[in-house]
Length: 208
Length: 168
Picture 1 (cartoon, rainbow over the protein chains, first blue to last red):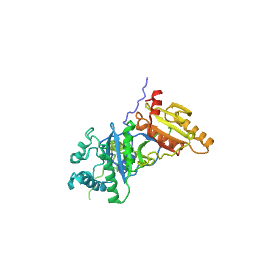
Picture 2 (picture 1 turned 45 degrees about the vertical axis):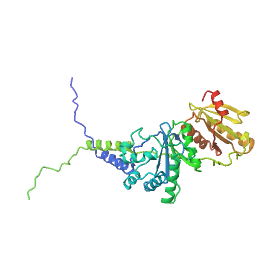
Picture 3 (picture 1 turned 180 degrees about the vertical axis):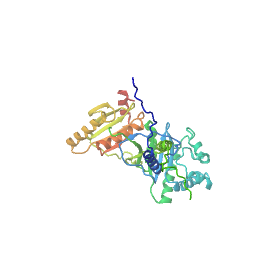
Picture 4 (picture 1 turned 90 degrees about the horizontal axis):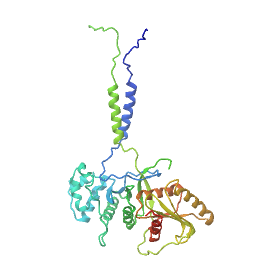
């Protein structure tokens, strides 16, 4: 039987257009990217249907996760230096100019102020090692307010002094955190007459 | 000048496959490292906590209050009116559109019709409920458009109710 001879030539596809498209996409992603910072306390926030975005500035965030550990950080790097100065006055811990600079690059921290110096001196990779930072104490001792409460208050003063604006407070809690841990934070805020705050959530799917 | 005549100008062909590969690899990398969705903020207003006059409480009509007691395993109990003398409930249900939402919608309508005023929802998270439950129920308030709601502290009677229903 005669065989039909199939011409076997390697098909060459013109890749130019595909190349163009992929580079357009690439440049789009590069220009819109805000690199994800490694977090010292990763939390899985609960979902909600709220559409309001978290503001970028004037925000103090209390992160709660991993069995009630509390972390605190403020959003504006230029206010952080003033914040650290206030902490050092309040707690009697001295910080060098170099340490202030390093602190202004830290998103948040989760250690008692007594150990803050060690955390500042670490590099960011060491700092974010899971389990290293044990959380800011949230219990009040005798009549003294808890350390977290003092830190929030100092941060509010720092904002008022350096930007003359109010700091907004957000709670970023882990979805599986037990309610008492969150309640403790809310009580701390309410004791400072901070009755309005935000809860940070993810976006939920439409069909809820 | 001497020119090399190679016989017709052939279009130089560059194989772009490798370049496309590289571009897609970079795209993947940037997509993974970018935080795509910015987190959202749910605003919460708590009532002012007055330390001096703790008993300065506002009385509200029992027939307007719906109490939600949040228990464990993503379950909650609800009752209309007082716990000792409930108008409706207590009933155990879940979250979301199959659970508490129909109840809330029905009660909102019912209370509006019978009293002419809005429903007041009292949310009482127990110690065994999670933060997710709290956010879910606050979200539910937004979905059903319940404007009057508050987060309260749980009492022993409500804890007993949860224990009886096996969600504590």
